[in-house]
Structures are given as structure tokens and as C-alpha cells.
Length: 99
Image 1: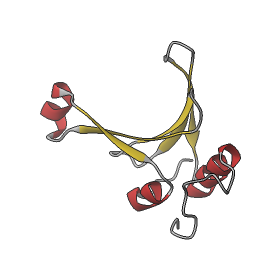
Image 2: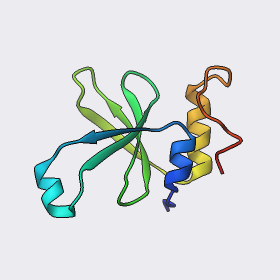
Image 3: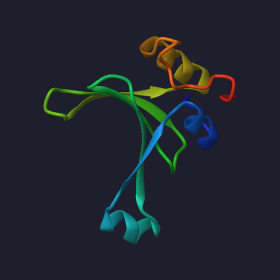
């Protein structure tokens, strides 16, 4: 079962906010869509849903189309995945701030 991950934890782990203008989304929810993500490689990224507070790892093909998605079960698993892709010295993650 997936557990919600707090916004503050996502930001502490170095996720980026990318506002996207989408009139349909705005008309339905009343605010602009924000793509909250952390790139792991050129074709693999972490995606966090603002509305659901759930995270998943996403893999794209060479054309940029999504090939696979896998849910992240917990904050601990998310940290393990980030550790796998980043060397500690190269990581932008402030682990002491991430709960």
C-alpha cells in the first residue's frame, strides 16, 4: 500500500516545481497545475502528485513517451531510490532535513 509523502519532505529531497499552464485543469480545480519531479537520469524521474501526495518512478523511451510507472510505497523507499541514483557527494539532498 502506498503511503502519502509530505510536501515538506519532497522539497527537502530536492524535487523541482514546474508550473504548467492548463486551462482545463485550472477550470476544474481553480489553480494552475504544478509538475513536481526529480530527474534521476535522462529517461527516469520521480513524480509526486500534489493532490494525492503519492510518488512514483517513471521511465520514458527515447521519444519521451512514458513506458512504465511504478508506485513508491513510502518515504523510506523514496530515499533508497534517490541514494541508488546519486552518489552522496554529488547529491543535492540534505538528508538531515528530510524526515
